Image (cartoon, rainbow, N blue to C red; front, side, top):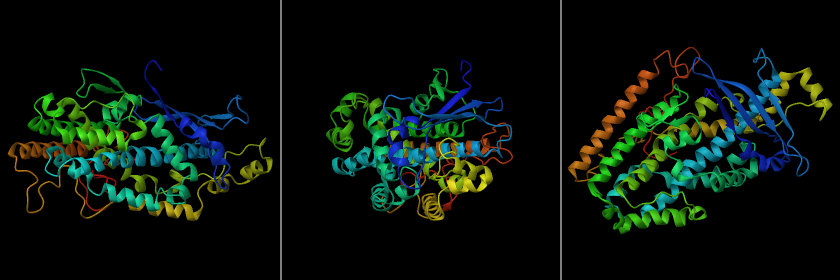
Length: 445
C-alpha cells in the first residue's frame, strides 16, 4: 500500500442494494464484487484477490462472501474462472449502465437541449458546441425506444434485467458529479493518479503505462487549449461572462431543469469568469468526444466474444453446502457448468449484434478537429477563431502521431507485445466500420 502498488475495482456498492431482486429473477445470478490488483514490475496489473458478496439473509447480519485467490494454474481452475466471469459481468453492467449511458449520453442531453433553447445559432458558444451536439438527441431517442426501455435489449441481455434503470438512477443520485467528470479530476477520484504540480496536467499517474490516461491527457490538453483560445476571443473578463444573458440562461437551465434532481448540489462549477467557462466547456467537449469514444468503440472488439466479458450470468459459484447436486454436476463437467453459467444463445447473439452496431463508425462520421469547414458557408467569419481552430487541428494530429508511436514501443506492455492489442481507442481518425479506434466530435451512435 505504501508503495502504491495495489488497486481495486469495486462494484460492491453499485450492485449490493439490488442483489436480492436480481437473484430472484429466473436465469439471473450475480454477486457484488471487489477485485484487488497488484502492479507488477513490468507495469501490468495482476489480479490477486476477488471478493464475491451476497446480501445478508437478515438485516444486521454480515454479508456472506467468498474470497478467491489465483491458483497456480489459472487456466484450468474453473472456480477462479467463474469468479473472474462474475467480476467481468459486474464490470460489463457498470460500463453500460453507468459509464457509457449515464456519464456520456444522458448527462450531455440537458446541456444540448438547453443550448438549442437558450442560445442563438449565432452565439459564439453555440458555434463552439455545435459539432459536439451532432446526432446525440436522435441517438438518445432511439436508445429509449429499443435499448434502455422496459424489456429492451439492456434488460434482456444484462444480469440486472428490470432493475437496470434503477442502478443508473441510484448512481446518478449518489455518485455522479459534474465537477469530477473532466479527465484529471476523474483520474484523481479513481485513485490512479495523485496531485503533482510539477507535471503538465497537475497530476502524476500511479500506473505509468495506462493507455487510456496517457492518450486521454493528450486530447484533454488539446481540447482545453482550443477552448481557452476561443473563449478568450469573446470573453476577456468576468463582466463579459456574467452579462451574457444567453450564456447564463443556458447554464442555468442545464442545471435547474435538465439536472433538476441535483440542482442544489454544492459542487456545480460557477459560471462567473472566463476560467469557469473554459472548464465547463472543456469537460463537455471531452465527454462528447474522447470519453464517449473510449467507452463505446471497443465494445465489440473487446467484448464481442461473450465468455471474455459476459453481460449476463446464470449461475452462482457451485457450493456443496447450498446445493450438493449442483456441486456434483460441476465436479463431473466443470467446462459444461462454466458454459451454462454464460448467457444463452439468444441473449448472447442479441448482445453481439447490438455491440457490433454500437462499435461501428458511419461513413459520414466527423472526427475530432473536423466538421467545421464543410458546406457553402464558413462556420465563422472571425479569422482569429479560424486560426485557433487550425491550431487545435494541428494539436489533434500531433496527438495521433504520438499515440501511433506509443503503440510501437515495446516497453509499454499494456499496448505492445505478443498477444496485446495496440491501444487505439483514442486515436482520433478512423475509416468507417468496426475499427476499435476513432474519436468522433459527438455522441453519434
